[in-house]
Image (cartoon, rainbow, N blue to C red; front, top):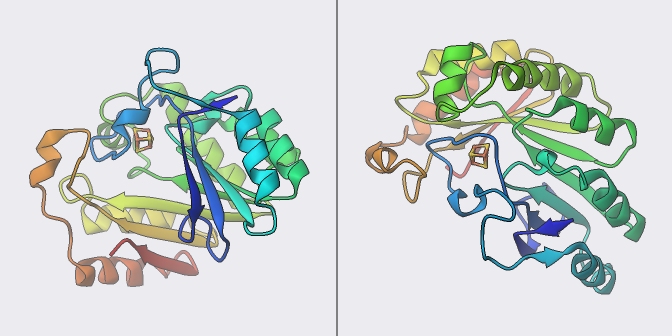
Length: 238
Ligand code: SF4
């Protein structure tokens, strides 16, 4: 497996742990508020350098007394069929593992859970679980199978025996406050839901550069309502 980028040390990507973050290339969505546009190009369609798994494992072996965890982010990591093997090798070195995913590959997610290859999953819930609204939040690129899988992944993760966080980037124009509360209602019974502040800088869709984010107070009101359905609701990047 190859990686498109790496943050050697992060204090914010795995709650409570010092983590290395690895980025995979390629995504099946095209979210207008995405900040990782450089990672969306399909693997092989770019002249950019890659970091090999061997290089990553060498680095992780050297740093195992200083680092606790590895986060795999993207792009969408679950599009990569070599992901289970890579995670297995990373776990063999002794690291905690976290996956950031859009939830559209339930079969892969299920395999990772069943084989105990991940300790923490953060799944994006892009919008209200209605096809048309979700399609808009994914930038018009969402197959009916992907949408079906997203619901399946939510069900899988709500019942999984590991740390799970659902999160939504709250974007005015895409999400009204009542949409966020509807998402929380859908997630009822989940342990953690994060509302991530929207950042208009460097978004994939330039029209989003002009959208004014909700205020902290607005988000706080939404979070308070969401707590009726999900015990722990937190604001991030606010
Ligand atoms: S799921 Fe959306 S936000 Fe995440 S990498 Fe793909 S396009 Fe970007």
